[in-house]
Amino acid sequence: MSKPSDDPVVLLQRCAAGDRAAFRLLYAGWSSRLHGIALRITRQSALAADATHDAFVQLWQQAGRFDPDRGSPEAWMIGLVRYRALDIVRRQSREVPGYEGDEREDESPDALARLVSTSEGAALQRCLNALEAERRRLVVLAFVEGLSHSELAARLSQPLGTIKSTIRRSLVALRACLAA
Amino acid sequence: MSDDQDRDLLAAEYVLGSLEAGEREQAELLLATDPEFARSVAAWQQRLTPLATVIAPVAPAPELWGRIEASIAPPTADVLPFRRHIRFWQATTAGALAIAASLAAFILLHQPVPTRLAMLSPMAGGAPVLLATAEPNGTLTVRPTAGLSVPSDKDLELWALPTGATRPQSLGVLPASGRQLTASLAANTQLLVSLEPKGGSPTGQPTGPVLYGGWLTSIDPSRG
Image 1 (cartoon, rainbow over the protein chains, first blue to last red):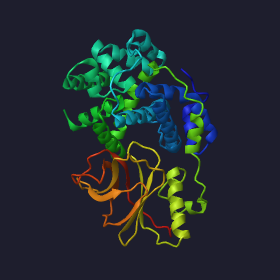
Image 2 (tube, rainbow over the protein chains, first blue to last red):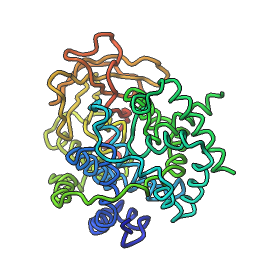
Image 3 (cartoon, helix red, strand yellow):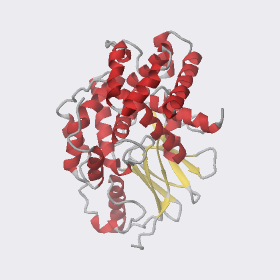
Image 4 (cartoon, rainbow over the protein chains, first blue to last red):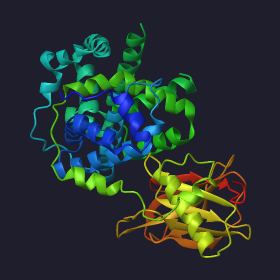
């Protein structure tokens, strides 16, 4: 994982003031992470590039709206690229499956173990591990690949209603666990 | 389950990424208009984002940076003298520059200065793409401030949604090049643009995603 070469909170504040050098540093530090995330959701490099482009343009234009009291710069920036990628794939009503990657690698204990690198990640990992394996898998698939309820239902051959209620229950459980 | 909890779960599903297209549009509309919902979204982003660390970084193509730089290039119009007239907008964003450039054009061309304007931005966030100006005589002018691409089998449709109203009122199809029309708009009105079948919504209500929106804001360029 690439680390920003400077504190992103400061860089975002400098972007808000129109400092292009700070923007360049943010791009250097974060573009690979954001692009990787976009690629997992869009599954096509051209679409991922569009999402990454849009996210950075939005970052530049809205850096002043980032509020460190509400969350980390990482969560804010990753949110930008994920929502743009999700907008793109939802608009395209993408053709389901055909994805060559092995999504299971994300659910393996090794992959989730990477979460513990931060205290928040460690808490999320503990709470994900408290979920049944099937529920954990749904949450990870939805977040990492941006699969919609209906896509998850198709992927897991389960009724849509079951998927929806399972996800809601999992989110309620995560919220309670993370607040504990 | 209370409404608050329902709202919070909608925020959770929005952040998780599992909502269908229509539900996402709904969530984005809430995100743009409901501060409480925006707080829920921020809290869920904070909870779930560590999951993104399981995704391997992939460097974008080298030319992407150039594309981004081109997209954030400042407009060339000399707009600085007009900045002080637009206190209602923090003058550092592209939106402010677009507004200032437009006001400058009105003044330079000796056109009637509008009394209300709205910057219409993507509901999901991002720079304004349309500028709407309303004159006291009811003339409403809507012009793109960025290139708009509309699928050839679709049309954009403009809607007015006054505060308190539950259903938007159609102001007709909006060409990507903009349009001028006459409309009587209430004081607190949000303008929305949805993507509709060719010729506009067949139902009189938006049937496609609401793409852009913004509030009409009173301005008084004589006050500086």
